[in-house]
Amino acid sequence: MSSCESRKLSDDYEVVDVLGRGGFSVVRRGVRRLNGSRKHVAIKTLKRLGFLLPE
Image 1 (spheres, one colour):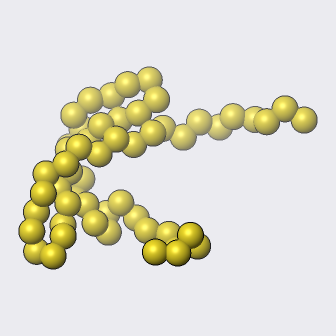
Image 2 (tube, helix red, strand yellow; image 1 turned 90 degrees about the horizontal axis):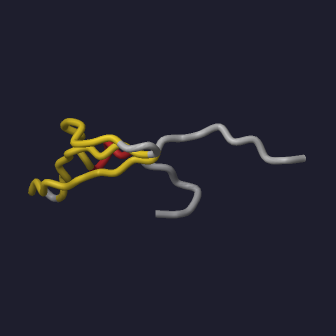
Image 3 (tube, one colour; image 1 turned 120 degrees about the vertical axis):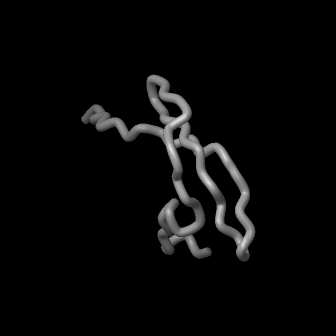
């Protein structure tokens, strides 16, 4: 995959439900779809924060 190509999480994983939440992230249970096999995984996603850079 080149650095210009973007992919979605849903392209490779089925996101099932939320396992836990923290101050800056959410952990979800997921299933990786790879060549017909299914592997259960934990998916940690970070919350996006709108920080302003000092001028």
